[in-house]
Structure formats: structure tokens, C-alpha cells
Length: 170
Ligand SMILES: [Zn+2]
Image (cartoon, rainbow, N blue to C red; front, side, top):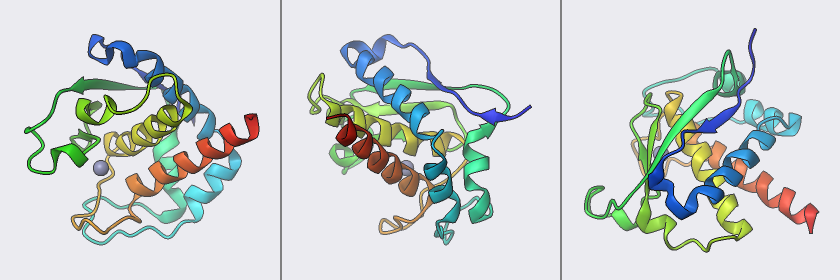
């Protein structure tokens, strides 16, 4: 039987003192993907499929990403990646080979986020959501301005939901 996926992180010593932030972020992500309003927005969006190597119907994006038979474990590693991502390495948050369960988060980015701050948890949730889409087979567009592709839209949507959740808790 299929059900809404539970996303977990593999424990990895490279997460070091960011471990709690990552755990809070993945817990938040699991809450957000269970909201019916989130599901409706994911399935009613008109996605940009130009220059994207994998495509599903707009109305089945949610099912494709989040309705699964088992838990999904993301293997997340924090790496000092300066120089390895090319010239724009300081702007890249992380990287996932599409279809692989392994995501590398750029230490240069995360080291600038304050510890014990909800902004950090929100930013990490959005980033994990983006990389999760890559792990499930979705690509970014080949052009830098393609923001309506699945990984970017889902990442931004998770950020908005996280923002609303924190706002209502104050
Ligand atoms: Zn991406």
C-alpha cells in the first residue's frame, strides 16, 4: 500500500554541529508535505517542462514525489566544496546527481547560516525539498532563468509553508 513518504536523513558525521538543524528541517518537511493545501498547490501548478529531461503530468507531480511505498532516506553530506562546483561555487547550496539518494551540501553556504535560528531551519527545509526532487528523478531546466521547474517550485513552496508555520507559532 502506498502512503505519504516519510523522509529521513542518514546520520553522517559530516553534518557535525549542523545535525540538529538538519533534523529539525527534515521534520518540518515531513509536516509540510502532509498538508492538503500543499498537495493542492503542487498539483495545480503549471510546470515548465522545456529543456527538462523527465516529465510527468502536472496534476500527478505530488503523487510522483510524495506518495510512495516506503520511507525515503536522503544521504546528506556536508562538504567543503569550494572549487569543486566551478566558478560559481559560492552561490551553489548543494548538488545531487539526478536519481541518486546522495546530496552534497556546500559547507561554504551552510557555515554562513546562524545556528539555532528558525530562518536556518526554513532555508534547509527548502533546500532539502529541492534536492529531494532531484533524488526522485526531477531535473532543473538547462537555462538559469527556468524557475518554474519542479525542484525550484517545490523548494520555494516549502519555504513559504515553513514561513507561515513559524509566523503562526509566534
Ligand atoms: Zn537543483
